[in-house]
Image (cartoon, rainbow, N blue to C red; front, side):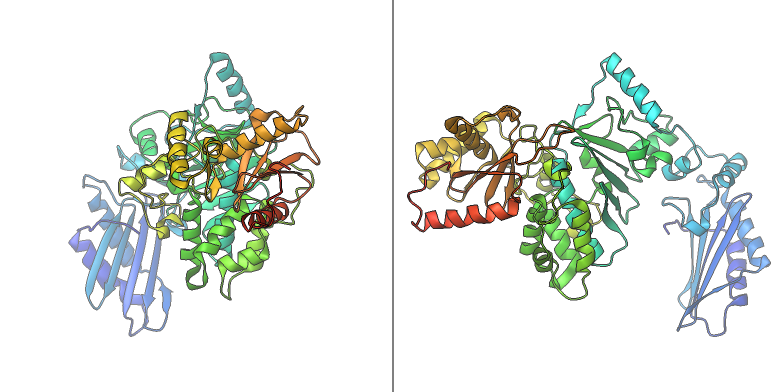
Length: 561
C-alpha cells in the first residue's frame, strides 16, 4: 500500500488505544487497514504474536474513531482518504492515508456504486486514472465485431490510414518465439507472474499491474494490445476531459474485442498494434517505448537470455539461453536445449517444453500443413527487427545510449526494454543503401575478402541478411528455377545458428507442401531443399559441409549445388 502520513491526532489516539482489545496476549505488532466510503466499510486487522499472524475483529469504538478520522480528512485539499493504515509495535505508531495512488486490494475494493456515492458527498476534481476507469468516468474504447466492421468501412471511405510501426517491435515470428522462451522460463521457475503461451495467444501480466495480450490469427495476422496502468493518457482522459485516443484508427475489421486484451472492457487499454502484410501498424497508440512496461522483455536475444539467467539463478547458462532463443526463432527447440539453458534440478522442464509445444516451436512439432508463426514473413526492408539476433530496435538503442537502460530484474517484469548496448552504430539490416555499401566496403577491406565477396557483404564469419537473400536470388536465376507462385521480391531470411534460411512465404489461406527452401552457409554457399525437411535437420548438414570446406576436404564443391 502506498500512502501519505495523516494527522487527526484525536481520532488516531482512540484507534491506537482500541485496536489491541481483541488481540491475543503478548502480541508484538499490529497492523490495521480500513477502507471507507459513505456507504461501504471494510477492516483488516492482522496481529503478529511472534510465532504467527492472526486476524482479529475491530470494536465499534474503533470504527467510530475511524469514521471521524475520515470526516476530518475531508477538509484537506486531497479530500477524504479512501483507505487508512495504522501500524503499532514496540517502536511506536505509524499511520498512512491512501488516496488511491495504486489499485486497492480485492477485499478492500468496493463496487463502483460505492465510490460514486462517495463522490456525490465529497466531489473531487481529480481521481486516480484506474479508479476513474473502474467507476466508468469518461468514455470507453470498446470495439465489438459489428463496431469494428463499421469503423473499418468508415476509415476506408475517409482515407484513414494507420501508422506504420517500423522499428518499434520485433517481427511477429521473432516476437512470438521470444515470448515463448520467457513464458517457458517463468513457468519452469514456478512464477505465477510473467508471460504465458496458450494456443495462438500470448499473455503477460507483470508486477507493475501493466500487461498485454498477443493474439495470433490465420493469414499472417496478429494483434498486440494491452495497458500501462499509470499511462499519462489515462489521466488526460479521465481527469482532464481529453478524448480517448483512436487506438484503432485505420485498423482492419478483425481487430475487435474477442482478440483484444481484457483492459478494453475496463477502460484501461492504452495501446493496440496489429501485424498485417509483414509489418506492424498502430492507430493513435503511443510508440512502443512508452508501452514497454506492459510487454515482456522480448527486445533482443541478449535481453531474453539475460532475463532467463536472472530468473533461474545459479543453474542457468546465459550462453545456452541465447542458443535456446535462436532455436525457438528457428522452430528447432529440443529438450536438450531447454535443459542446457534452464539447468539445475527443481526446474519444471516438462512445463517449459509444453509452452514450446503449444507455441509450435519444437524441432519435431511439425505444423501439419497449418500456417503457424514459423511461416510468417520477416519483412526485412521495413525497419523492424529481423531474425538476425544482433539486430536491435532503434528506441531500445536510444534508451541505452541515454543511460536509461534498466536492469534485467526490471526487464523480466516488462518494466524495461534496454539491452545495455551503447553503440551508436546503425544496426545491420536497417541501413540505407549508402550506409550498407560503406560498411561492406570497410569490412571487405579489413578482412581481405575479394571484390565479389565484398559486394555481396560476405565476411570472415558470415554474411548479412540482405546478402543472403541476394545470393539466393542470383542462384535461382543462374539455375533457371521456375518462380511462378514464388516471387523473388518476397524472399525472407531467418537465422538458424550460422546459417541463413531463405524462403518465400506461402500466400495467405494457402497450404503448400515441399516448397523450396534455400540455405546459405557462412561462406556464401547456397543449397536448395524443401519445406518438408525440418530446418534444424538440414542446417546441421550445411554446417558440417562448411567445416569440411574450411578443412580443405570439399574444394571441388560448386557454389549453389
